[in-house]
Length: 388
Ligand SMILES: [Fe+2]
Image 1 (tube, rainbow, N blue to C red):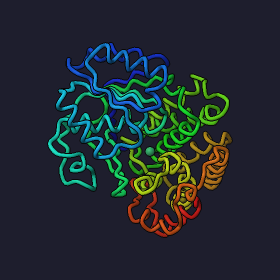
Image 2: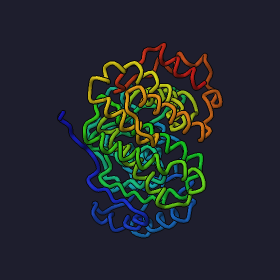
Image 3: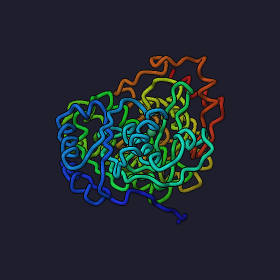
Image 4: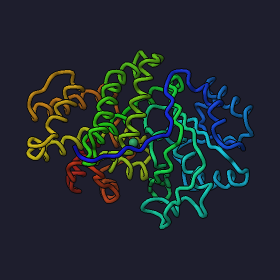
């Protein structure tokens, strides 16, 4: 067995209704003001209002209601306020962007300088790892940010989307209550589910995957594949289905943080920095054409290694039919993806204002991360053309 390691939250609390434990959990952290980050839609829901009021009653609270992906200006402004008010604990109640914003502010409250200085591939400073404690309550089932050590920061004017990353940035507490996702609109449920799905599949096929991340990714794919379409259809209010998605998304955060991702995220990241396309939609579009090239290119290598068993297992799981050969597994996996994305009616790239003339600058900023096959620039162009 290859060596492996696992980094995750100190504490995970998972379950319907468990959000009510938030106030009790605050007692485990230093006394002092709370910086509470939230998003507009959860802040206007009954569950959100109740939780926010409970935090405000328990401690002096600065409330930050955000929309969209965090920019350096938003992070720096909130960090300045947290320093002035001597915030002791940070709470994130929202989707991936809210949790990323809170994670970045918790860290930047303890650093000198702006967040841009510390972003991978942008700044030249190394984060010290000092950070305020963070309790993350996800309200969408998608990015898995509640389990990861990075915060994605976007600067649309400069056309980048980059990570602030340190092992210490994994939130010490993830409080995952699937009931918080009940008010999530269908379009957001679809985009977030596609992100989680893609993260699970990419980390399962990652060159850095381990026996442990394989187990977790497989479990996540199993939960997600049985509940995603029903929750996006008639069962939007089914707490068991929502629990499957929240659990799958949480697992995708662990697997991406410990096994890495592949070319789908290697292209979706820069694309999201340049264009206004939901991250999960970009992933959902790219996953089939990227896998198509990857699995065919590595066929000879994989048929002689442990990978053949892996791809057969996941193809059988997702298609619901046993597959016996490598080629059968590839065909079955690709037709599953085609069928799934078709049923979800995902709009192609041109719907988001992306044209063939934009491919060059997207590809220039793209990479293969830990994909088992390194796509060339020409192959990336084929991928984009397939979903134009
Ligand atoms: Fe993602």
